[in-house]
Image 1 (cartoon, rainbow, N blue to C red):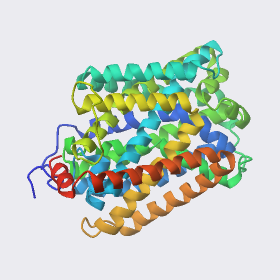
Image 2: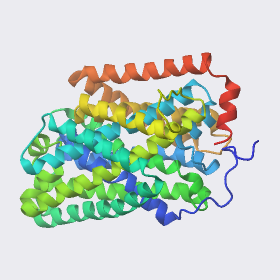
Image 3: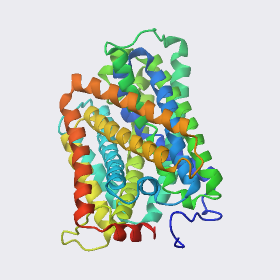
Image 4: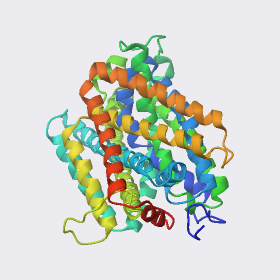
Length: 446
């Protein structure tokens, strides 16, 4: 085994402490998702939508197990690609599932960009229209410029913005509940007109609000005592997130009726702030949403470009510089922001969130199956937990697909056609243009 292979974990890890790792994890997870998805989830789940966040956290807790045990065995900066390569070998399955993860992250960037634009336009009474994609694309360009300026700028920006948005979102929930009174939230024991299928579909979107935990595995080798702290970081971050999400969901539910939430699904938190916190609360919530979405986008662009660079160096995806100067990382930054910008222009928030849910759930199931089938005995994992995670993902995915097929069949076709194309393209690329030994040689030096 080579000295720098994934299978040789660092003895003491890096310099990121448990506290800093938790701050990093919650900073990635909390913020953009709550602003972008609260209204969408409430529209599907009805009056009981806060419960959707709880169930999303439960599914995520089971899903996190596969990532934790693999990261404990091989702490690295390889993240998802490392886990998939260990589970399946450096072939088409690992490569395609890694690409799906990258795509789900890029889709999340377009979701965040449109959410930023939607909140930015609220003080002017503008809903929808061409300005939403225009402002969204402008934010993506800004995120690119910050990333081009270097890792130091990204790190400093992310640290400051994480503190602001986590504290601000928690204060919003507490203040809104205090002003309106939790007694005003009357959880009628009924679902929305979408029924149980709609509620189950909402859980798919709730899972998206937690999926940021996977980025913690990308920094596994840089966390102190990684065998002990990577798993603890993931679990603590998920618990913090579910508390904050539930607090915000209760605050929105106490301030607005389900019908009002549905009408304001793209900017539900700002709409909830105005009746209980007044005009000042409204503007502060808009500002907080803009800070949270902007910082989340910058961090996501950094993470995706890093992941795609690694996949390129491992010869798992093709690369062309198209005449551009600079290294692979700079090219991947450009490809990332261009793809995110195109999606921002083409799709609305609901469709973007649906695409992200399909890609992430399929990738997650591929991870669980590979770990259960090929790795559980090698790393002494509990098979029943992995199978439970796989079953929960399958139930959510099938239910979500059935619901979307009735309401928006086009997005289901687009999602699964894209998944099929990714797998076929990877099989063709790795089978015809790249030798297995070449991939193994590159993956062994990450």
